[in-house]
Image (tube, rainbow, N blue to C red):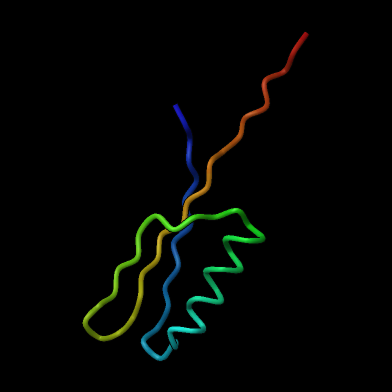
Length: 61
């Protein structure tokens, strides 16, 4: 079973679509995050949930 860690981001309503895309692209490229959920509110703000798989190293004898 995969284990995930989550990061929650809040983007205020003044954030342009291009700026939001750049921010999420940077998180994906450099932090290995993937988009789990994006909620666009009626006022234009965005709530983003990113996730990435937790890799556990198993020690061998």
